[in-house]
Length: 353
Image (cartoon, rainbow, N blue to C red; front, side, top):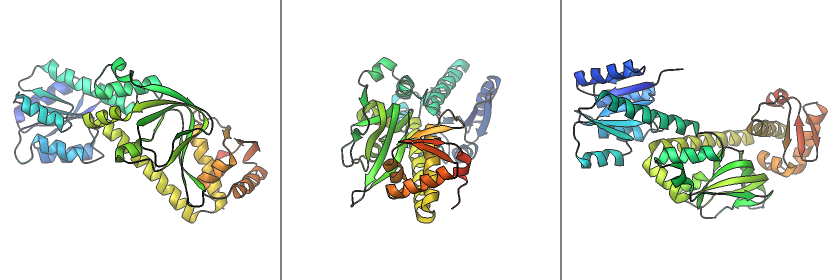
């Protein structure tokens, strides 16, 4: 198992070396920086698992370090512990209000330091993993992020069952929940002026959805509809906002989800502009195959209506049917009703025409 990497930012040489020695004896990999500016550079280049930072330093103090790192998505979610010789509540409140995860007051006992480090690393690991990708895991994720016990966090959360073609929300609705898909499949889509549908996202068990509008404090820019009977956990938006305001790791997790979605949509736009229709159909099949074939089976059956597939591709249903017929003749797939049985996923990935 790889050692956890901890960055210590402290201008006092004796204190810096003392902290480093304690952490190294506890089997951590320690990086050290003698001032705030060097600490910021080290955090961005070395990506530590946790940062311990003195508050009072010349040139750039600990508050400045935290402010800079909290503005960078690559360092935003790194757990941050303040080290301060001051114990006044106003200093503690300022640091925690800026997004620090904990603080240690100098002088400190060796076990106080190690306990704080271990606790923050455990919480960070739970958040990165999203706990397990099921309802109990999300409840644990929420509890860990907010520092509450599970019973307190989940008492206002409920699950709701949705049937095929039922809407979870519609374009223009006001968001009231963060959604977590425990079972089934969901699509999000937009309609053009001619009433044609374009799928913007596919979601499987273990996925959050509907968070973009919550982050933007805006109405939904797309609709969400069930494509396979679904069970959804409804997390009230106030609970979500509380987490976002109180824990930088949660913010970082959802920023990463947004970044991944933006990258995926950029690729879709490029594909629409430059790829042939048959290539886009092949890519759509690969996209759905990889999204829903979590077990990685060599052969896999996609259960998806031709209209939905056409909405992913951005073309007419008839065009998709013709392309599927050609793929069937080539031996890439077999089809019956809604079901498309993938025989050669590699051929679809490598399709060039």
